[in-house]
Image 1: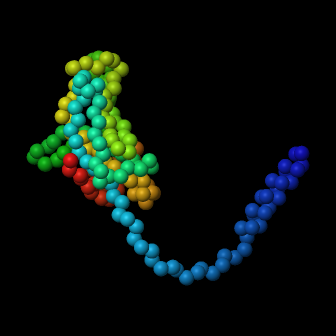
Image 2: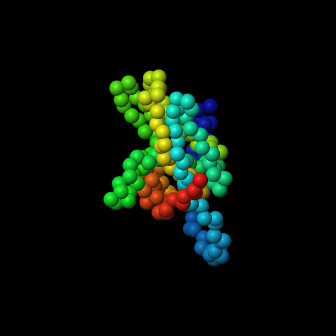
Length: 178
């Protein structure tokens, strides 16, 4: 049995080795330019979220109908952390955000489906009214898979700010006003 397996393995290896030998054939004529593909760009939308005891520390927002989300797409979420008026500069921070306080650890995070995005709080202690966050300005960024596939070096896990995302993608993210 061992000899049979060794014979088959050797035969396959020899076949692959000899099959790759030989001179390459001539290069054929170049075909016509194909039609341009659809322009697929990341888009974003903003909304305010309240994370309070009355809503179970979660907030849902429908994704605008102009944005079609597919299973292979990526959604990122940012919260407006600060505004620097002298430079007219917004400071955005990517979710999740973890806060360590005297009661323990609390995290603001998100998840999404094809139709909505959910912003929520989670903690390793019982959340109370002291932990409420109101009027959080959230920017959700939809990155289509078709756009991802055209960017070989894309590593979304290395992106920490919206401006880094725009710089890496080489585009300015379009805004949908709600």
